[in-house]
Amino acid sequence: MIEFDKLDEFFKRKIILEGEYSGVYYDLHLHTIASDGFLNIKFLKSFLKEKNHLISITDHNEIRKSIKSFEVEGINSIPGIEIGCEDGMEILAYFEDPRELEEFYKVYLEPYKNRYRMAKSYKSWEYYIEALGKFKTHTSLPHLNGYAQKNYIKNKKYLEEIIKVVDSIETYNHSLDKVRNLRARDLREKYDLKATFGSDAHTRFDMKSYAKLETNEVFEELKIIEGAKKLYSIIGLGGKHLKYIFKK
Image (cartoon, rainbow, N blue to C red; front, side):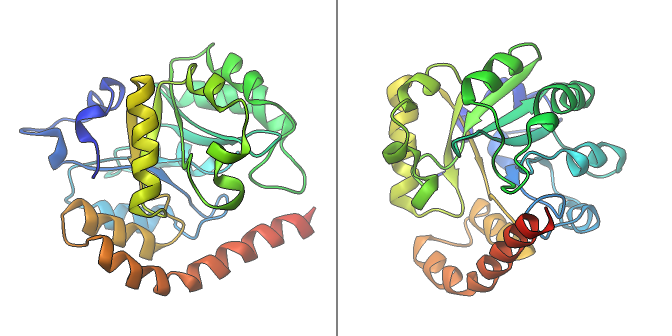
């Protein structure tokens, strides 16, 4: 289900391990309290303890916790961000160097953050792709076949254009069902791209559920039950977005 074999060397060389790469806990898409998540660095350090792991904190248009993770012993992470474009399209961007992530954010993103929508900005995907080209990065398109506005396959007429200029497609997102993830995999195969994958976690529950899947402890049928439990998380997530709107 998770395409470990399609992960780019950009990520693999960031870890030291023996044996198969599939033995590593990878989570390349998660959110903290810096944006619309409820995860903090203290929990991540505890959760990842004794795990051979590689994660990336990819907050919406925000980098504080991603940068902070490099100051914490016991967390092996790649600098990351989930860029929200003006029309809602999102791009996962991973950086070779946290200093380059800071430069990109301060120069090309922070001045254009949407005052009322946390996951949007006032610039187009073309603008961000061009800006990212100035740095050593790896780009991926998340939840292409998601729900509502996240279903870019239906909503973005230019989807084929942006697929041709990114490095990977997220072919497993733990917030989506099996069929939607398989459709993303089909696109990856069609365009012969690499793959990324992650929990898209906003809560501790999300991360723990994803970890069970990586160790083959949870299957699609159990995700239905877990989905019902996730209702509380969704309500809380919506509350954070509303708070962002009215704060401005």
